[in-house]
Image (cartoon, rainbow, N blue to C red):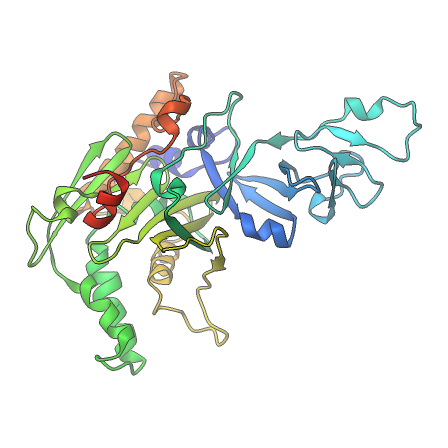
Length: 390
């Protein structure tokens, strides 16, 4: 278990907090890129800050403070123009750097606009997602993990907003034994209670998850933590043990499968202390990738208020939220099977110390040559051969 002080360190993400300072050293996904093509102005909240994301008439992305500096109107009600985003009240306009570039009601010779600037942060688009960086100047490169940049991969985005702290989502990833119980036995219980027959495809989908976990191991590697699992009937020569699957510091999980060429890259974006957005970017092979990345919001309940527990990610949602807004980790009782959770927490505490020394934490890339396509371990051999791992 953690001390109360350590729990505060790892969970509080607002401006001025140690974990907020660490997380601000990274780029975070904040919106589906396709959403801005349909609605070019969007309010967002990231790391406890309320902001407005927009795409101007020139196609440039901007992320600025939530209010116009003039009469403090929320810019989510603004609209895009060639120069940036325009406040609907009096036409004050801000470019992507937050600089006021127009004040139509002021005298033509006035230089007042040159003295007005609102908060703004860098934003970039990659793999169907818009990413933001809220940290100190000289932003690092946006990490180009290989599944995000391979031309041969098609992609589809799923996301959900969960009312709990970001760490609860992340600690789910190194906790491998939950797969057998939550996504296997519990999922079967739910389906059976809803009258789903055992020969139904939905029930059969749960069967691989119920394979008993014989052994797990978690090792540190170059980018974070590598999860290894041995299930009943498998050997340590098989990919799930010999290759493993990565949890990337600070908030990325990569899932791959022996049975398919799919890879899912998952981020848990800290919205604030008590909310996260989970982004699941499914990457898969098609003969002709479609280019655009469709996006879908995952909702916890259906139109009748019943939990959508047939969906694996909603099972996770339920568990994250069932722990409360912020878990009091001083009350936990951890066992040998929790070694991955313990290791992940320690790695985060170590990275807090790195930032305290004014150094770059793990996975902050600054060399473009090292960031063209950053490989990550995946357990499907077919994919590995195509991607040049084997």
